[in-house]
Length: 108
Image (cartoon, rainbow, N blue to C red; front, side, top):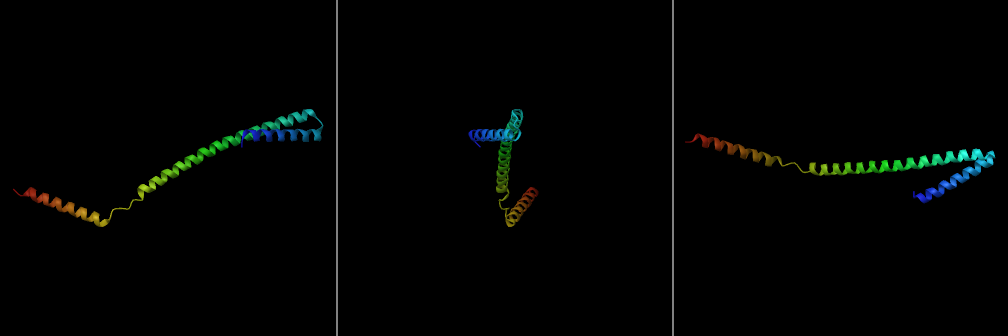
């Protein structure tokens, strides 16, 4: 909410509050006290709403960062595993090579 709108609504509420309290009590002192109390409550409410908006924006940005991190982790994990036949062929090739090297070591 822009400050000018808040300022106009603040004055509207305070003036209507003062008028209603004066009509009900016919006391200027009661009008002053209740108008100041109303003004203080409105200021506290505005300040609390600003703090809440700041907290919520930080919370949303942290959630967005977590989601982006999770998506990037999913991309890394989502690579298909190597084919089992290829792994078996590679291990058989390594075994055969190791046997040939062992035999070559035995020969003079």
